[in-house]
Image 1 (cartoon, rainbow, N blue to C red):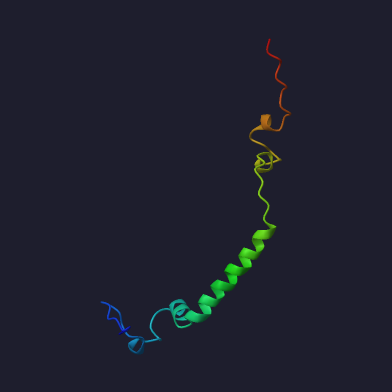
Image 2 (cartoon, helix red, strand yellow):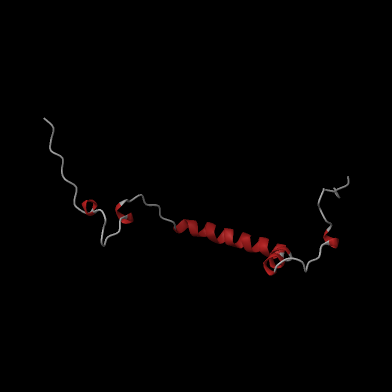
Amino acid sequence: MNLNISLPGRVPMADFDSRSGSLVERAIFNNRLIVVLLCLLLTVFFASQLRHLELSASFEKMIPQGASLYPELHRPPKRPRGIG
């Protein structure tokens, strides 16, 4: 079984000039293993931070408290009168 499949436009790594490209390109593509490990570490870190995440659907916390554009939202709600 031959795993060296020739794809159109693919250049063998031996023919690749590692000094080509911008500084950012060289930092990423010449250090692929480090970049992948860094992404893996960040993924693990952010996944561990999910334990401390609190979800809240409170609308009042989203309204600005000072200089409100909607003062009626800060007033206590009116009690509806009984029907009948």
